[in-house]
Image (cartoon, rainbow, N blue to C red; front, side, top):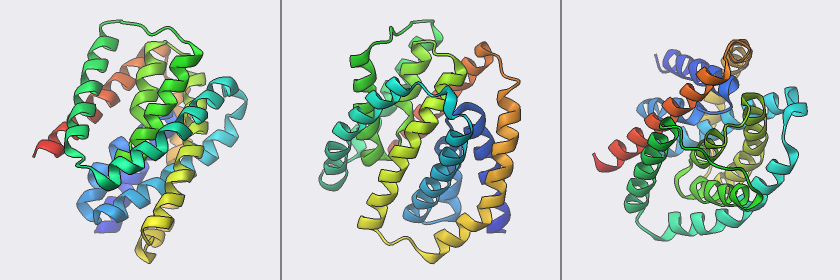
Length: 238
């Protein structure tokens, strides 16, 4: 029964990730936590997210904004260590509540058509925040979603650049998992079970992406942000 549930989760989350460049963690993690221990769920999420990002980045590498990617990676390197120290030594509940409220407020502003002007310092700061949230909460996506959606970045550039960035950030996350926790045999077996459905999800996500216009793409991004904020707030409070 667990395998059937795993397959459904992985397929749906892979379609979303391949179609938008975001969403695997948002969709998969809450459900993976129902059938796996928390560390196993997070590790499985990282492995499959990294796989999707690697495959998709190679396929759409010509669409990547390489200058933006460099600034995001530089910022990420700055934010990773403070986030890790916070994760190890401090209570995470206040941070989770703050981040969830920030995501919801930002989503409301974006839905109200408040825009963000693109600039090099803002992209660097977005990377810093993403790196910080990666090692503290395991959530690299929200800062990128908020920044790129607010700047009204073209959907192809947004998807390709964030997927390329995920290759970097998830590789670091996997190395940290190796250094801090043992990745169990069960996680690797589950990843192998999920592999063919991840590949199918990538194919279907590509098909979905070709049929999304920019306006609908923006609405999907806002929806992902909203559910991320709600999920983080509810799970922290209750």
